[in-house]
Length: 379
Image (cartoon, rainbow, N blue to C red; front, side):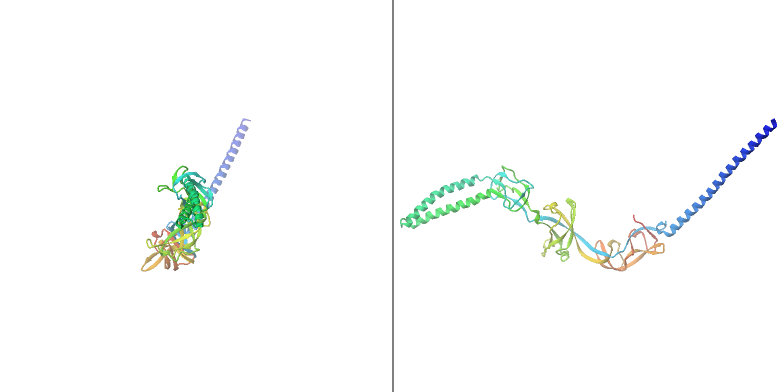
C-alpha cells in the first residue's frame, strides 16, 4: 500500500513538470517571433527613410540651405514717399479790432458756430460815452443849422454862416455814424462757420492791445487738405486723379486718396513743387498741422517680372542672378544672364533672362557657387 502511494506522488510530479516546461517553450517561441517581427519592421523603416531621402532634396545633409522665390509676372509699381501737412483755409484766429476788456464769452471749446455769430462781448462803455457826447452836440448843431437855413431862405445873414452851420451838422452826423460802426466792433463775431477749436482768453482780460493776442480759434474741417512737396524729378509723374497711400503716424491711420491738384511752379530754393490731396474719408480724425506721410508711384508696368535689386550681380559687363536648376530630384545653383528693363533702388524689372516659374535664390546667395546642390527652406 505504501509503495502505491509513493508511485502516485512520482507520477503526479512528473505531470506538473511537463506542463511547466511546455508553457516556457511557448513563451520562448512567442519572444523569438516578436524579435523577428521587430527586425523586419526596423528594416522597413530604414528602407522608407532611404527612399524619402532619395526623393527629397531637402533631406540631404550635404545640400546647402537657401531661401528662394518663384518668378511671376505681376503689376509693378515703384513707390516713393514724401512728407505732407494737413492744412485748412478755414483755420481762423479771432482777434478784436479795438482794445478793450472782455465782458463775457458766449461760446465754449468744441461748440459749432455760424458765420457772424457773437462769440464775445467787449467793454464798450467808452464808445457809448463818446456817442452820447456826440449826440448831445448834434442837437445844438442841428438847431443852429436850421436857424441859419431859415435866415438864408429869407435872404438874411451871409452865405458863409449858413454853409458853416450846415458843415458842422453834417460832420457830427458822420461822426456819430462812425462811432456807431466802431461800437459794433465791441461785439466780436465769428468770421466763418465752423467749430470753436480753442478759447485763448478769459473774461475780464484786456485784449486787442499791442501785447494782447487772439480770443479764439475757429476751424472748419470741411475745407481741409493735405499739402506736400516733391522733388522736381517727380514732375510729370504726379497727376491729378492719381491714387496715393497716406499714413498718419500720430493717429495710426492709413488710407488712400487721390491727388486733387499739382503745382506747375518749382520752388527755386529747394527745387520742389507742391501737390495737394483733398481727403474724402476720416476727415473728423484730421487736425490742422497733422503730419502725413504720402506714398505715390513714379513708375507702373503690367505683366512685369521684378526681383529685389540687391540680388542682381554684374560680371564682365553682364548682369546675372543666381537661380535654382531642378534635375530630377536634385537642385543645383546656376547663373542666369539677364537684361534689365528698369532699375530702382529696391526693385529691378527684368527684360529677359527670367521666366515665370523660375526659382531665384533670395537668402544664402553669398554662400553658394554655380553647381552647388541646395535645399529650399522657408525659415
